[in-house]
Image 1: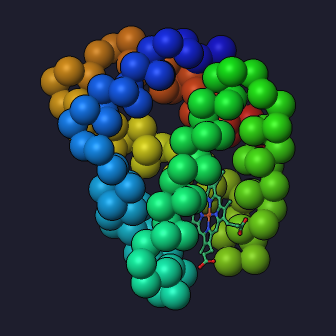
Image 2 (image 1 turned 180 degrees about the vertical axis):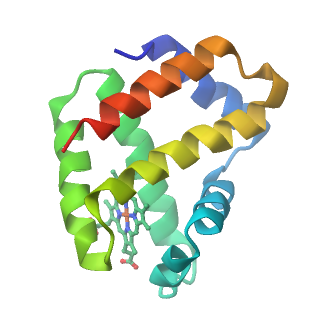
Length: 129
Ligand code: HEM
């Protein structure tokens, strides 16, 4: 089980560095997987991207609280996104990108404890099918 307090604190500490990390998250995602960018062509005001990141944040925080509904949300997103041409494992990329964005924002303030807590969290998410 990931360390809930540690993960929460990374959210708060990252928010102090950058109030809205969504653009950084998508920039990183699209660098990794350029073919995902045109999927958002219709999202001219960034509203869909913003709400999708919020859904991911809620899923992470809900998971840490032990809310079963957030497992269902991750599971159903794996399935619903096959409609956009993603494979189910692609969804894990987004959570890894969120971790990487926070790690970059925190730079040398990112600790070994943060790294371990996030690795455990990402493993737990990857195990949700
Ligand atoms: C690899 C990363 C992902 C890509 C490329 C992706 C792509 C998309 C696209 C193209 C849409 C539709 C946009 C539109 O209507 O214009 C969408 C919607 C949505 N995404 Fe993602 N997504 C990703 C990861 C996730 C994750 C991890 C979650 C949450 C656990 C999530 C939750 C949602 C939700 C709730 C919607 C709106 C309704 C729906 O289609 O289910 N997405 N996503």
